[in-house]
Image 1: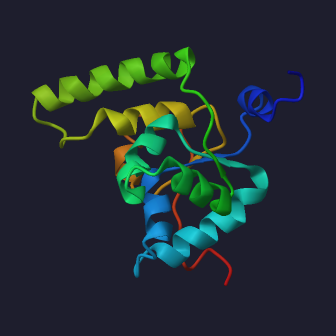
Image 2: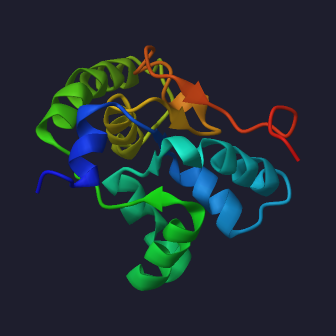
Image 3: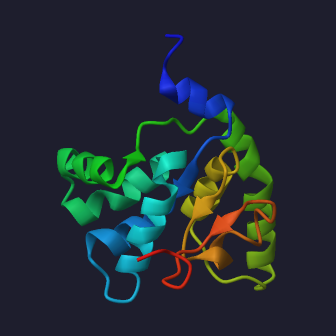
Length: 156
């Protein structure tokens, strides 16, 4: 299908990936981060927002496994949720995961799940990653633009 927006999004590095923590901030109306996270998404929604398939899985418990409710929430937030994790994402995850394991074996890095590396690799094909957890991504994807919600930088 020539007008499939997912194909356009893949071919043009358009939009930002939203990390799971940002969506949980909004869903739970977190007193410290909920407002800043919501305002940040509002500011970036015109450029397009997506989540990694890994984040779809990570969000499941927040909705009691109710996929319909989860999709409704994401739609209300302006976040696309149906893009695939592709073979290029696997390639981009490969070396960072190896570096992580080597550092872990030397006890030079704290425990981090493979999910963060998969989300980071997925995000490298887009304009950036909206997250509060910069330390989970920066060591493995130094070229990845990280966008951190801040009440000082978002408009009221």
